Image (cartoon, rainbow over all chains, first blue to last red; front, side, top):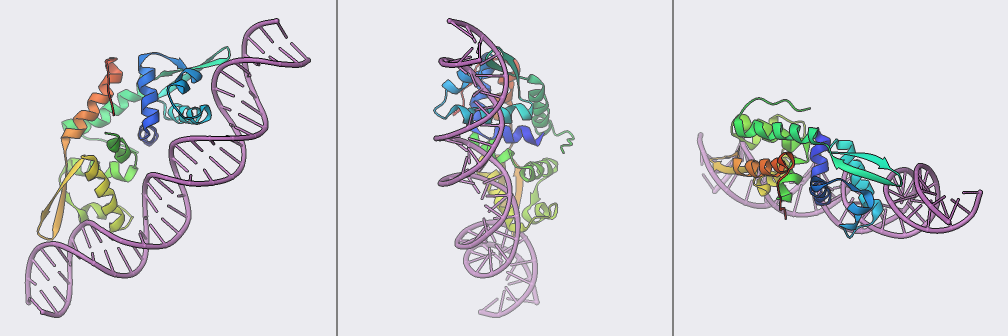
Length: 91
Length: 91
DNA sequence: TAGATATTTAGACAAATATCTAAATATATG
DNA sequence: CATATATTTAGATATTTGTCTAAATATCTA
């Protein structure tokens, strides 16, 4: 769960999520949106994947990334706790 | 706005927010919940304050910290964007 | 199988971060 | 004013993080 907050703390990774929110993209397409190198993007994708925010699927030479909504729903619950004033248990 | 995600990326700071979600606390009371030193907690409080997540108010020798809900609502909007599939514009 | 394309892994490095100790500031009170 | 209490600021340090280049892996196709 802490991994998710860590993953969201980087602006490049948040932008990747916003791109994937439109539609799934392969690694190269994602990299094209940024100035940084493909290996750096690949590193960010690993972090996003480990946090559970995205999933990947190889299709031929490409690896296609897309958002996994499940974790976003958990995040919403964490924030809801503050707005509603209910109980909370994290790590 | 990126400051908020950065602020939330540290587990100590998230725990501080959870404590303040119960009720306002002064710096010493907050520090008592943790093993780390008061200066370190003070540093975390500065980061939380700069992000807009908390506000402080001096009362005598104490400085009392409490949550500012405004930013939480903005966070909710950001997450809502993913769950609903609407448009988004950040930084 | 050889070569081209897509992507990741490995290793290095500079910048950012969390923590500490020591010192400074602010307030209250005898 | 002098001392005690609460908190922050300053400066140092070890760890983490984001980035890079070079090399490795995986897949497709001629």
